[in-house]
Image (cartoon, rainbow, N blue to C red; front, side, top):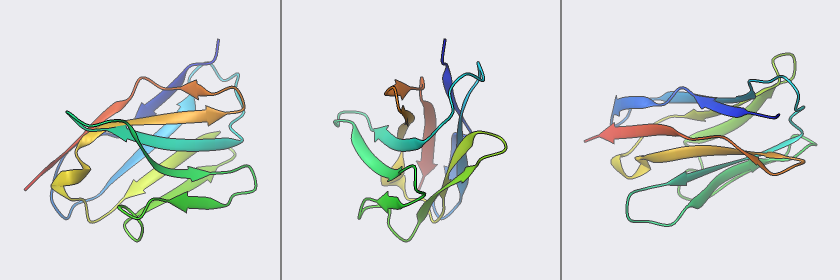
Length: 113
């Protein structure tokens, strides 16, 4: 059974950086495309960015210029590099892999002012 797992979350001061990783811990699923979502307290889940199978990436305006999405094929892992973090980036971050629409359990990112 595919088990996407995020890692790399934590507590960081504003202006700091974190790198989130997403991989299939069961080593079954080959990640072709990956979306990153986040859900802040009291808010709806929102798309952060996406990377398709061709390697094209899309980032929402709120994170454009600060976040990047990359992939390590050898490790079957997709990364969300987050720089210049702001308190409003505080949320639980989820990876969503395709094909199959698999979701990880989420990792908490907290940015202090």
